[in-house]
Length: 425
Image 1: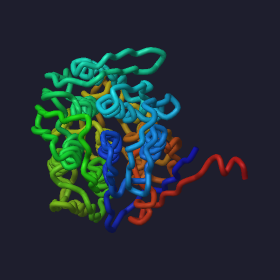
Image 2: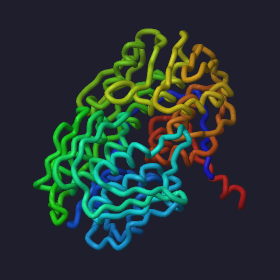
Image 3: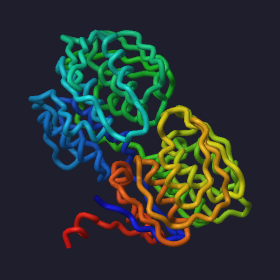
């Protein structure tokens, strides 16, 4: 089990390129299961979750050659607990397997322990498409001779449910309408991929709360395409915040400003010094004191839950009081005790955190509790005095490709320590 040693305080400088979005690549990989002809996904990041999904796909019979997915010889529609337990996105294979093959057995998913995140919305939607669903012994059993288009009104704009139902609707007979659909760029990316892959497929309303999918024949074959996923807006936001916190000059390249509006707006309202271009965001040393903020996590296009922890790390250094309310996941403040161990003054009241900033952070041993909390602890360590030992960074490895290498190239003193190797020495 690896850990990070970070020596602060840091001053960063240089440019960093953003990887392709994990939260887009995983549903795109699941989407290749609908394809009989080979398809390519370019520049997949080297992440733990991506590797896990590749193992899962290989178990179905998918042949992987570089960026190419060959899904013409699927001989198994079973997703075992051993793989699914570590990654919630694995449940996304349910929709495409059911749509193309009429059956699937998928373990209930795992992932970060940040809330219940039930799959009820996925299953209820599949039932409306005509699937027979049973949950038994920790597995989802799904069957349908052929799915039929239906009107589905999601109780919550769940990204995963929207993606699963979108893929399930591809081979469903007739039209499927998904209301209160998620509007996230990752959903749009999946829809664009499917529209490009299948000539007769018509997915309308991408980027809005209503999706209309005109299903195609189960015998339809895809075009052989090579598709490039969108850049990772959460990784980009993390590096932007890192630049602001360390009062540095950074150039964050290969991002998409349209996906980052809520983040850059919040930072600029707090007097962060940013120059925003189409695919590059520049962070410069501030010319005004940063001010506190009052933020509430809500579905896209508003403030994202996946940067809540990073903004909390930022709030600790601002000579002001900030308030962050978490309205997506009920258990996503687990980083608060760890930041307080470093000297922060963060007070919780149910799903609201009040951060009394301006306290000088000091290095301490801390523990990662989930993916985005891990990034927040690294950011805090970069402004803290002394050395911070960050344990359980396997959480971070699920979503950041070469994070410590990118930070090292910018001037951060960060070192990965392999604890198991050290114990054997």
